[in-house]
Amino acid sequence: MKILWMYHNLMDLYGDKGNIMVLKTRCEKRGIPCEITTCTIGDQVDIDDYDLFFLGGGADHEQSLIFEDLLKRKENILKAYENKTSFLLICGGYQLFGAYYLDQDGNKIEGLNIFPYYTESSDRDHRCIGNIALEVSIDQETFKAVGFENHGGQTKNVATPLGKVLYGHGNTFDGGYEGFVNEQVIATYMHGPLLPKNPRIADIVIKRALAKRSSDITLEPLDDTLELKAQEVMLKRLKVSI
Ligand code: GLN
Image 1 (cartoon, helix red, strand yellow):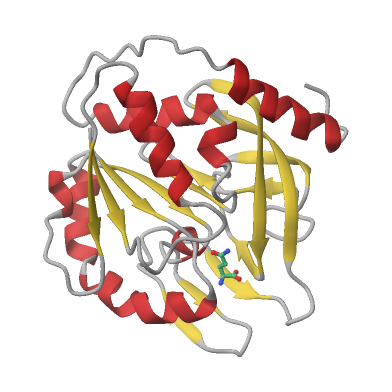
Image 2 (tube, rainbow, N blue to C red; image 1 turned 45 degrees about the vertical axis):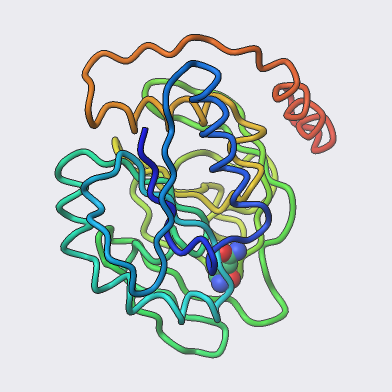
Protein backbone atom coordinates (compact mmCIF):
# COMPACT_ATOMS: atom_id res chain seq x y z
CA MET A 1 0.00 0.00 0.00
CA LYS A 2 1.43 3.33 -1.03
CA ILE A 3 0.51 6.28 1.16
CA LEU A 4 1.17 9.89 0.25
CA TRP A 5 1.36 11.95 3.45
CA MET A 6 0.75 15.54 2.43
CA TYR A 7 2.29 18.51 4.28
CA HIS A 8 3.44 16.21 7.06
CA ASN A 9 5.56 19.03 8.53
CA LEU A 10 2.74 21.59 8.61
CA MET A 11 -0.59 19.80 8.85
CA ASP A 12 -0.24 17.55 11.88
CA LEU A 13 -2.37 18.42 14.90
CA TYR A 14 -3.41 16.37 17.93
CA GLY A 15 -1.62 13.22 16.93
CA ASP A 16 -2.71 13.08 13.28
CA LYS A 17 0.49 11.22 12.50
CA GLY A 18 -0.83 8.42 14.72
CA ASN A 19 -3.24 7.65 11.89
CA ILE A 20 -0.31 6.95 9.59
CA MET A 21 1.36 4.76 12.22
CA VAL A 22 -1.82 2.72 12.61
CA LEU A 23 -2.18 2.15 8.87
CA LYS A 24 1.44 1.00 8.64
CA THR A 25 1.16 -1.31 11.64
CA ARG A 26 -2.13 -2.88 10.51
CA CYS A 27 -0.71 -3.52 7.04
CA GLU A 28 2.55 -4.97 8.35
CA LYS A 29 0.81 -7.30 10.79
CA ARG A 30 -0.90 -8.80 7.75
CA GLY A 31 2.24 -8.96 5.63
CA ILE A 32 1.07 -6.15 3.34
CA PRO A 33 4.03 -3.91 2.48
CA CYS A 34 3.28 -0.29 3.34
CA GLU A 35 5.30 2.54 1.87
CA ILE A 36 4.93 6.10 3.17
CA THR A 37 6.05 9.10 1.13
CA THR A 38 5.90 12.63 2.48
CA CYS A 39 5.18 15.63 0.29
CA THR A 40 5.31 19.25 1.30
CA ILE A 41 5.25 22.67 -0.38
CA GLY A 42 7.11 22.60 -3.70
CA ASP A 43 7.81 18.85 -3.76
CA GLN A 44 7.32 17.13 -7.09
CA VAL A 45 5.09 14.09 -6.90
CA ASP A 46 2.48 12.35 -9.03
CA ILE A 47 -0.46 11.78 -6.66
CA ASP A 48 -1.86 9.19 -9.05
CA ASP A 49 1.06 6.88 -8.12
CA TYR A 50 -0.43 6.47 -4.64
CA ASP A 51 -3.25 4.39 -3.20
CA LEU A 52 -4.02 6.73 -0.32
CA PHE A 53 -3.74 10.51 0.00
CA PHE A 54 -3.57 11.59 3.64
CA LEU A 55 -3.90 15.19 4.76
CA GLY A 56 -4.04 16.09 8.44
CA GLY A 57 -5.39 19.11 10.24
CA GLY A 58 -3.81 22.50 10.75
CA ALA A 59 -4.31 25.84 12.41
CA ASP A 60 -5.48 28.77 10.26
CA HIS A 61 -1.84 29.87 9.86
CA GLU A 62 -0.70 26.53 8.43
CA GLN A 63 -3.75 26.33 6.18
CA SER A 64 -2.89 29.74 4.75
CA LEU A 65 0.70 28.56 4.13
CA ILE A 66 -0.24 25.45 2.17
CA PHE A 67 -3.40 26.28 0.26
CA GLU A 68 -1.71 27.81 -2.82
CA ASP A 69 0.53 24.77 -3.22
CA LEU A 70 -2.51 22.51 -2.79
CA LEU A 71 -4.50 24.42 -5.42
CA LYS A 72 -1.63 23.96 -7.91
CA ARG A 73 -2.11 20.21 -7.50
CA LYS A 74 -5.85 20.23 -8.25
CA GLU A 75 -5.56 18.67 -11.71
CA ASN A 76 -3.29 15.96 -10.36
CA ILE A 77 -5.67 15.31 -7.45
CA LEU A 78 -8.60 14.95 -9.85
CA LYS A 79 -6.62 12.55 -12.04
CA ALA A 80 -5.75 10.42 -8.99
CA TYR A 81 -9.38 10.54 -7.85
CA GLU A 82 -10.57 9.38 -11.24
CA ASN A 83 -8.09 6.50 -11.09
CA LYS A 84 -9.37 5.37 -7.67
CA THR A 85 -6.84 6.80 -5.23
CA SER A 86 -8.63 7.12 -1.91
CA PHE A 87 -8.47 10.08 0.45
CA LEU A 88 -8.34 10.48 4.22
CA LEU A 89 -8.73 14.13 5.20
CA ILE A 90 -8.68 15.47 8.72
CA CYS A 91 -10.10 18.77 9.95
CA GLY A 92 -8.14 21.56 8.18
CA GLY A 93 -7.47 19.09 5.33
CA TYR A 94 -11.18 18.25 5.14
CA GLN A 95 -12.05 21.95 4.94
CA LEU A 96 -9.64 22.59 2.05
CA PHE A 97 -11.37 20.06 -0.25
CA GLY A 98 -14.51 22.21 -0.06
CA ALA A 99 -15.21 25.56 -1.68
CA TYR A 100 -13.48 27.76 0.88
CA TYR A 101 -12.56 28.33 4.51
CA LEU A 102 -13.28 31.71 6.03
CA ASP A 103 -10.96 32.01 9.01
CA GLN A 104 -11.50 33.79 12.32
CA ASP A 105 -10.00 37.04 11.01
CA GLY A 106 -12.28 37.07 7.98
CA ASN A 107 -9.56 35.90 5.55
CA LYS A 108 -10.90 33.67 2.83
CA ILE A 109 -8.72 30.65 2.12
CA GLU A 110 -9.69 29.21 -1.21
CA GLY A 111 -10.37 25.49 -1.23
CA LEU A 112 -9.98 22.95 -4.03
CA ASN A 113 -13.75 23.14 -4.57
CA ILE A 114 -13.91 19.45 -5.37
CA PHE A 115 -16.92 19.05 -3.10
CA PRO A 116 -19.68 21.62 -2.63
CA TYR A 117 -19.39 22.09 1.13
CA TYR A 118 -17.87 25.27 2.58
CA THR A 119 -16.57 26.34 5.99
CA GLU A 120 -16.97 29.58 7.86
CA SER A 121 -15.37 30.27 11.20
CA SER A 122 -17.29 31.10 14.28
CA ASP A 123 -16.00 33.98 16.40
CA ARG A 124 -12.80 33.67 18.43
CA ASP A 125 -14.49 32.66 21.67
CA HIS A 126 -16.45 29.78 20.23
CA ARG A 127 -14.74 26.66 19.01
CA CYS A 128 -15.92 23.07 18.83
CA ILE A 129 -13.46 21.45 21.21
CA GLY A 130 -13.45 18.12 22.97
CA ASN A 131 -14.22 14.46 22.75
CA ILE A 132 -16.74 13.32 20.19
CA ALA A 133 -18.69 10.14 19.55
CA LEU A 134 -20.49 9.21 16.34
CA GLU A 135 -22.60 6.59 14.77
CA VAL A 136 -20.73 6.11 11.53
CA SER A 137 -22.36 4.79 8.35
CA ILE A 138 -19.88 3.79 5.71
CA ASP A 139 -19.57 1.07 3.05
CA GLN A 140 -22.76 -0.65 4.24
CA GLU A 141 -21.49 -0.79 7.83
CA THR A 142 -22.88 1.13 10.82
CA PHE A 143 -20.93 1.34 14.07
CA LYS A 144 -19.83 3.72 16.84
CA ALA A 145 -16.63 5.74 16.64
CA VAL A 146 -14.87 8.07 19.07
CA GLY A 147 -12.48 10.94 18.51
CA PHE A 148 -11.30 14.40 19.42
CA GLU A 149 -12.22 17.66 17.67
CA ASN A 150 -10.90 21.21 17.88
CA HIS A 151 -12.08 23.59 15.18
CA GLY A 152 -13.60 27.01 14.79
CA GLY A 153 -14.81 26.24 11.26
CA GLN A 154 -18.46 25.39 10.74
CA THR A 155 -18.83 23.21 7.67
CA LYS A 156 -22.11 23.47 5.82
CA ASN A 157 -23.77 21.99 2.76
CA VAL A 158 -22.46 18.49 3.40
CA ALA A 159 -24.73 16.16 1.46
CA THR A 160 -23.30 12.88 2.76
CA PRO A 161 -21.88 13.12 6.31
CA LEU A 162 -19.67 10.42 7.79
CA GLY A 163 -21.85 9.99 10.84
CA LYS A 164 -24.45 11.15 13.28
CA VAL A 165 -23.15 12.94 16.38
CA LEU A 166 -23.88 11.11 19.63
CA TYR A 167 -21.69 13.39 21.74
CA GLY A 168 -19.79 16.57 20.81
CA HIS A 169 -20.30 18.87 17.82
CA GLY A 170 -19.16 17.71 14.38
CA ASN A 171 -19.57 19.82 11.24
CA THR A 172 -21.30 22.63 13.12
CA PHE A 173 -22.00 23.39 16.78
CA ASP A 174 -25.31 21.62 16.91
CA GLY A 175 -26.19 20.38 13.44
CA GLY A 176 -25.97 16.76 14.56
CA TYR A 177 -23.75 15.43 11.77
CA GLU A 178 -20.02 14.98 11.33
CA GLY A 179 -17.62 14.72 8.40
CA PHE A 180 -18.12 13.86 4.78
CA VAL A 181 -17.95 10.50 3.06
CA ASN A 182 -18.25 9.03 -0.40
CA GLU A 183 -16.85 5.86 -2.02
CA GLN A 184 -13.29 7.20 -2.07
CA VAL A 185 -13.15 9.95 0.52
CA ILE A 186 -13.34 9.93 4.29
CA ALA A 187 -13.20 13.46 5.67
CA THR A 188 -13.64 14.19 9.35
CA TYR A 189 -13.06 16.62 12.20
CA MET A 190 -11.78 13.74 14.33
CA HIS A 191 -8.02 14.03 14.75
CA GLY A 192 -5.24 11.62 15.73
CA PRO A 193 -7.27 9.14 17.77
CA LEU A 194 -9.40 8.45 14.69
CA LEU A 195 -7.68 5.26 13.52
CA PRO A 196 -6.01 4.15 16.81
CA LYS A 197 -9.38 4.03 18.57
CA ASN A 198 -11.53 3.01 15.62
CA PRO A 199 -9.98 -0.08 14.03
CA ARG A 200 -13.01 -0.64 11.77
CA ILE A 201 -12.42 2.72 10.14
CA ALA A 202 -8.71 1.90 9.83
CA ASP A 203 -9.51 -1.31 7.97
CA ILE A 204 -12.01 0.45 5.71
CA VAL A 205 -9.27 2.96 4.83
CA ILE A 206 -6.87 0.10 4.05
CA LYS A 207 -9.43 -1.81 1.95
CA ARG A 208 -10.33 1.28 -0.02
CA ALA A 209 -6.67 2.10 -0.65
CA LEU A 210 -5.83 -1.43 -1.79
CA ALA A 211 -8.85 -1.35 -4.14
CA LYS A 212 -6.91 0.97 -6.41
CA ARG A 213 -4.77 -1.91 -7.61
CA SER A 214 -6.67 -5.04 -6.70
CA SER A 215 -10.28 -6.09 -7.06
CA ASP A 216 -10.35 -8.85 -4.47
CA ILE A 217 -9.39 -7.67 -0.98
CA THR A 218 -10.06 -9.64 2.15
CA LEU A 219 -8.24 -8.44 5.24
CA GLU A 220 -7.18 -11.00 7.78
CA PRO A 221 -8.79 -10.06 11.15
CA LEU A 222 -6.45 -8.68 13.83
CA ASP A 223 -6.70 -8.82 17.59
CA ASP A 224 -8.29 -5.44 18.41
CA THR A 225 -8.92 -6.09 22.11
CA LEU A 226 -6.89 -3.09 23.30
CA GLU A 227 -8.17 -0.72 20.64
CA LEU A 228 -11.79 -1.61 21.39
CA LYS A 229 -11.17 -1.31 25.12
CA ALA A 230 -9.83 2.23 24.58
CA GLN A 231 -12.92 3.02 22.54
CA GLU A 232 -15.19 1.56 25.20
CA VAL A 233 -13.57 3.65 27.95
CA MET A 234 -14.33 6.81 25.97
CA LEU A 235 -17.90 5.79 25.09
CA LYS A 236 -18.58 5.07 28.75
CA ARG A 237 -17.05 8.38 29.80
CA LEU A 238 -19.29 10.19 27.34
CA LYS A 239 -22.28 8.13 28.52
CA VAL A 240 -22.92 6.76 25.06
CA SER A 241 -24.12 3.16 24.89
CA ILE A 242 -21.57 0.71 23.48
N1 GLN B 1 -8.08 26.02 11.45
C1 GLN B 1 -9.25 25.24 11.24
C2 GLN B 1 -10.37 25.57 12.21
O1 GLN B 1 -10.15 26.07 13.28
C3 GLN B 1 -8.88 23.77 11.30
C4 GLN B 1 -8.41 23.36 12.66
C5 GLN B 1 -7.90 21.94 12.73
O2 GLN B 1 -7.41 21.34 11.77
N2 GLN B 1 -7.94 21.41 13.94
O3 GLN B 1 -11.49 25.32 11.92
